[in-house]
Each structure stands twice: as C-alpha cells, then as structure tokens.
Amino acid sequence: MWQGLIEKITDYKWRIPKSYKPGMRVEGVIYASEKMLSQIKKDNAPEQVANVAFLPGIVKYSLAMPDIHWGYGFCIGGVAATDPEEGGVISPGGVGFDINCGVRLLKTNLELGDVKDKISKIVDVLYQNVPSGVGSRGQIRVSNQEERRLLLEGARWAVKKGFGIGEDLEVCEERGSIEGADPDSVSERAYERGKQQAGTLGSGNHFLEVQVVDDIYDREVAEKLGLFIGQITVMIHSGSRGFGYQVCDDYVRVMIKCLDKYNIRVPDR
Image (spheres, rainbow, N blue to C red):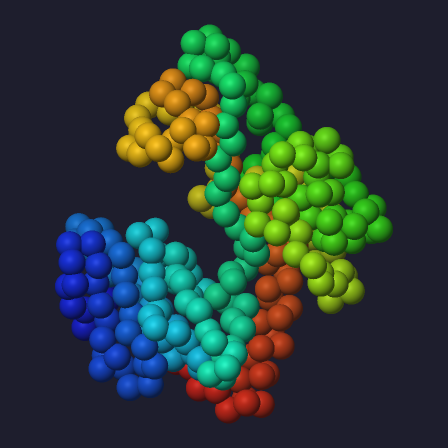
C-alpha cells in the first residue's frame, strides 16, 4: 500500500507535491475519484508518477489518467511531455513496451435488431479470424520484405491488403504512418517475433467487442461522429504485440547506458 504524500485538488484531481521526493522537477497529478484512489494506492502506482517527475526537461506535470496502474517505469495511464530546449529526454519506458497500443471505435450502419439473433455467429467468426492470447499467431503471413513494407506504410499497407478502406486513413493520426520510419533500425529478433503475430489481438486488457450505443451524453459530438442510439459499433484495443515489446526492450538497453553517459539520475529504471 502506497503511503506517500498526496493532496486533494478537486473530487477527481489529486496532487503529489514536489516536496514529496527531493529531485522531483514537477508536481504529480492523478485524475481519479476518492474511491478509485484507495484502489490505486494498493499497487504503488503513485510512486511511479512521482518517479517520472525526475525526468530532465519534463513540462508542467507528471500526469496519470483514471486507468492508472503499475507499469514499467511509467505507470500504465501515465502521461508526460519533455521539452528538448530544456534538456528533455526520450523515454522508451514512457512510450511503453506495447508500442502504439490504443483503442479504436469503428461505427457501422447496423442497428441492434439487425444482429441480435446473429451474435453467436459473429463472435465465432471473430474468434476464427482474430486470434487472441499470449503467443497467439495470426492468419496473415508476411515475408521479410513485406514486413519491412508494413513498417514503412503502416495503415496504408493494411488498406492496400483489404483490411480497411481509404476513409479509415482520414481519421488516423498522420494517416496511419509517420514519415521518417526506418526499418533498418529494428532488430532481427523483433522482425522474427512480429512476423507471426500480424492480425492478432494479444492478451492482458486487450479486447475486441461488438457494442451497441445505449446512451448519448453529447448530441452535438455524436452527430459529428455519426453515432446514434441503437447503433452497432466495434471497439478494439490492441498494440504491436511481441514486435513492439522487442523494439522497446532493445532501446531500453541503449537508454540505460545513456543514463550514465549523460549523468542522468532517476529513482527507477
């Protein structure tokens, strides 16, 4: 149980002051209810919020979102920005081992009545086509050359292969691929791990759900997004699987050496 210093700002916002640990450059801020906070303290995650505040060049706060729980260096749900003009650093642990992990909501033109009697069949088809679990292997097979092309093109590659449509790219950051990607910067071990996991879901808190919109809190936003009561949507939470883990692991080792090289002191590696 975490016993550190924390102060209430509002019913849903809590502060870890800089005075909590000598060396903190900014305050820590956690977004959670009081009930959630008591649970959050049980796995010591607030300590990681304080530790992130030691990073050189960190801007304004070390933040934690409501899904905060114990992670690798950063807590899961941790957010921090660093300014290179102020000596800011890049933290592979901050990006996380599951690089590009995130959640996406896909809307459909179906309503609950259209699928109510077909739920079991839909679930069966999803299980057949989207393997899940630790070490799961996908049905998408890629060669070494194709895997490198996937890294360069990102979501564009998926659209070309029929796994999406052009409109999907319009709602992806950087249209699904950031310029400057360099496949040669990735280890052969990462390629080997990723080759068999394209199109898989993973484990832990990753999921693929068929959902129905049963309430709307902001009608203006819902209309802009094309969402309506009774609509069927699909939500997916996944990441980069063993490939991303290996990339992070490779570069964490590099960064650990850099700590000594640049005389950077942090309480948790």
